[in-house]
Image 1 (cartoon, helix red, strand yellow):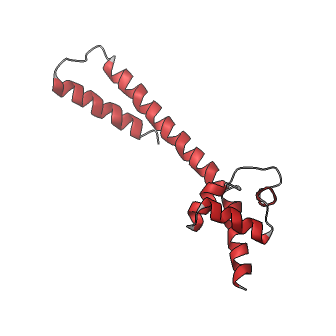
Image 2 (cartoon, one colour; image 1 turned 90 degrees about the horizontal axis):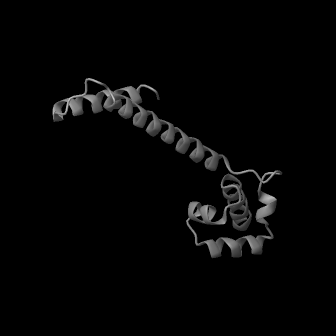
Length: 112
């Protein structure tokens, strides 16, 4: 009974991680080698646990989407800073530079 529950749990964890042994072991709280040994004991194959097309797990796709969004935000901030700093009426004083940086940050934060 316990072995069947463990087998189902490991199957679910591996499906969620797209068959990535390291992430699955970390999620399960065991060493990667222990996970590998359990898979052998239960007759499970990582290839069998991946989607038919070997697609990446949803968690991996979510991380990639989040990373892409952060990069877009950084790009928007950089462009806003460039625009603010290339303004013809930009003064050299620290107050003016801070004001332009705040305006650029505000412009970038509204693009989210």
